[in-house]
Image (cartoon, rainbow, N blue to C red):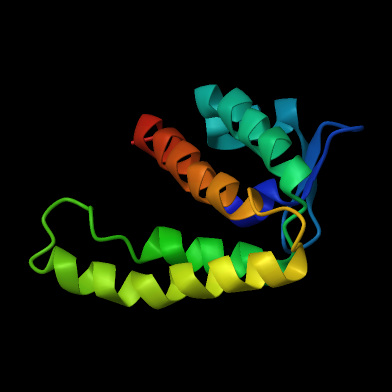
Length: 123
């Protein structure tokens, strides 16, 4: 979901999938996103000011996938240790890319929380 949200075009209120398919809000709603549609589009709009590049999007996606606080993990601490270098890589990369915007990294991390909230509502 993170990747598609980075392909949001606010002027047309559309999202473009990796295969090039572009859908409007209504089309996404009808395609199965249902009541989550507005949440997904709102999240996409909140990502725009961060101007994430492919590296930041990839690292954020990996951080979301490797998460130690998921239910029923046998070794959550071990998973957290796997996540630590990804967090550090994102922090360093984001600060090198935009050194005058030190608040970008914490804002990116907050987006992970927002994304999890949407995912929880979709379960």
